[in-house]
Image (cartoon, rainbow over all chains, first blue to last red; front, side, top):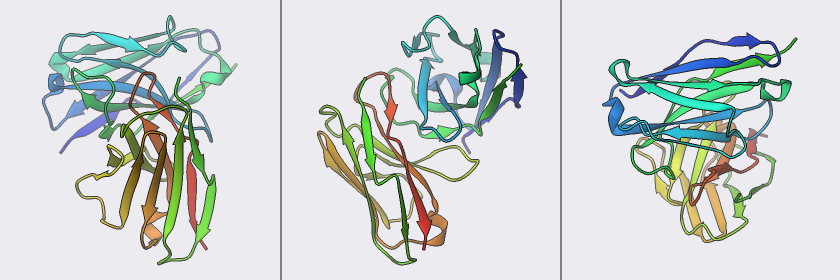
Length: 121
Length: 107
């Protein structure tokens, strides 16, 4: 069955960077894209960006442009998301989710379990 | 960015009741509208895509309708397992955006 398994929770100081992973199984990794969506406590989900796992092309939300980098390592079926310049407002659960490979604007049909990132001094 | 406005923000109904949630987009999004169910501490789960297409394995008591700017999501007979927050999300254009959520509780 399709599964997206994310790395564990992390605590970071303000100004630091965080990198998290999303390992896919149960399907051909490069046939589908990976999106990253975050959700601050009590808030609505917020889309951050996308990677075409086939060719590595990325697209980021303007809000995070310059601070977010999404990559993938196809042999391991894993996508990564790095967020830099962390501030307290970045405290959130970060989710990866699966979409169609070549079209960005699609439903997100499977989601990882989430990675909690806490930014605190 | 396309703004998505949901109402109500919360509701409390009895088991077996019909429950309806609405979602309004700030511009025409055709039928590019999804509904997700999120239980506490869990990831969102896709329930309906394309405004009215029920995902495989989702109970038929869930349904969706609408187009352009006005959409609705209905649970025909509320069950205890339906307790969750429901979000609409548009996929007409980037950035993908979500509604504020509707928390559904049992009375």
